[in-house]
Image (spheres, helix red, strand yellow):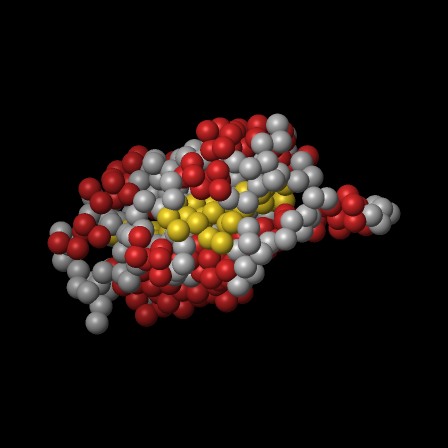
Length: 331
């Protein structure tokens, strides 16, 4: 029997042993490369049965050149690196991992919020430069009673809402896909996006990156925001119009930003955000803990193993394939 070939298109991890362990029972040919371009992905994956993907582009051109591919599994929740429509047209299962790092991302978002609100980074910098003066952090406002606006109300922001409520924050959210009853059960008020910016003292972005959300936060929203408001983004950089964010910060329309994700990663050396003392930037790390990394890697590989074993994966993105493929549901 011919071996299956599974290719990892690119990765930032120090080891791929968890993936290999999951796939070992299938006796696959396991290939790990570091692709950056469409051409490199095509060369590495044209005869692959399964693909594991982090950031390399899985575009229409790539997918149309895949000869044997049955499944593409992405490390993470978002699948914006993959042309989902074309994959579905070709009957290729796309899998993600929707339930890992909920604590990690919500913790990181709240850590950025607290660091901004309490001016932790700025004051630390001043002290280490020989200045002992709490007045340099003014103004700082009490969290209790203020409003946190969540852009998106999926699993991660729902987790964040519970943590923020313990600090006495009122929570509002914008998410056109979440039923009012779900929000009410969380003691969260659903509002329109512009109203969220008008009312919020802190804004935390958790929307997935899709055509409808790309650049959805732009000049219009920043013009409505409170001048003392802070914005945090642990979702995808391009959900925020970065040029508009820079203008808003430069013109004092908002008080600061905490960014784990950016429009272009790694951040470019000439990006004005790097020189702003009211901006905290971390290197797309909100998802990470030792535990979440292992969980992500094993579940991503399991998506591939499931399909190559004749089953629909637990984390099926293109669910319309359920009635089109000869795969079974796992018991």
